[in-house]
Image (cartoon, rainbow, N blue to C red; front, side, top):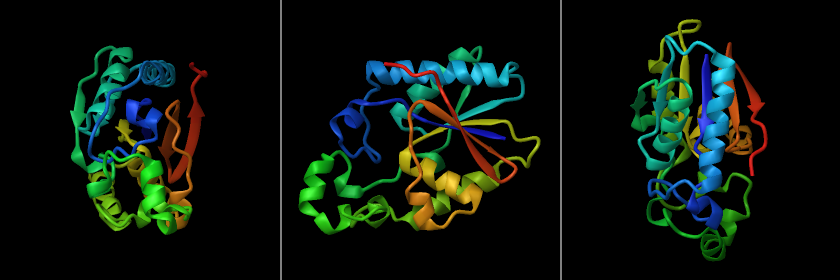
Amino acid sequence: MIYLVRHGQTEFNRERRIQGHVDSPLTELGVRQAQAVGGLLADLIRDPAGWRIISSPLGRAHATAEIIAAKLGGLPVELDGRIKEMSWGEHDGRLRAELEADHPDTFAKTNWAFDASAGETYEDVAARVGDWLASLPPEPQRRIIAVSHGISGRVLRGLYAGLERDQTAVQDVPQDAVFLLQHGNVGRIDCEPVE
């Protein structure tokens, strides 16, 4: 099984700024979200022996993973670039409102992230995330907590569940929930609300 987590809220999330491969720190809310997710995972897993925490190397995901690891008794955090966020190239770090004004045709679409004019494509992200997924041990030996991002997490869930690209693009990307990927199904487990 895989428990998939998105990093906690960041300064860029709060500003509605595209992060991609650039980074910003977790906000106080983001830290509380990571703590809540860690507590939820501790309740779900109970005995962390045999579990692995694998995180995107980007700072916001790594910080979230370290908070979760502490809640699980200090499990080591492994970093893997294959689950890092999608890059928008020159758009990384820009305000979403600026991009919407500059590219109204792209941002009017439901799956705008996969149709951006710069950076990685859906196929790029699917290839690297799919490679990561294929490298994991088979179920039931698979006991993974993956800390990733909004878009790459959508792609991972979509690949795992066999969703089409358009279905993948419209999935929720909460920062206060855990997704359980098991037996070809994806389920969502929400944390207690944090403010």
